[in-house]
Length: 210
Image (cartoon, rainbow, N blue to C red):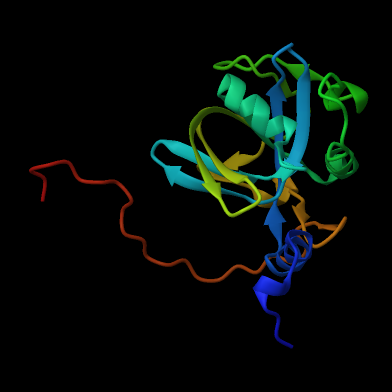
């Protein structure tokens, strides 16, 4: 089977790519509207882009040519929180993707308690196993439909007790969920452990150092 991208609508291309680029981790993002309403929405075009400083990247599209509330709020305030939800929160993650007027708080609608963040004004979810407070670093536009790759620098990590062991996250304890095509999600399933590989140090040597 062969498909010509030029013959596909943006919606058809999205359905195709979201079924091919799988599984995708979910950034469950809280933002604040200009009037102080807590917005909450999931985004699965999500990764990290830097380790020093730690930075996350999320692709945020538009609806009918307008920025989604999350994108608009990030542009307005320059702050957001990225959460990693677990399998017990899957239904809330999915339901938070429903469209509501800007003055409706998805967090309140779903009965999700929030707490103050340490370094930014945007609150974080109290029950999420991971929350990463972020300040906007840059926005890179892509394509013809107005999608933007939003990069934020992490200013604080919040991890549930018991998730870290010897400096690494215990993935089974985190119990993350991922997005696949359509309204479909998956959990970790089988984990395969292979031999560790030698790694060159990621630190950049300063000038004059050998």
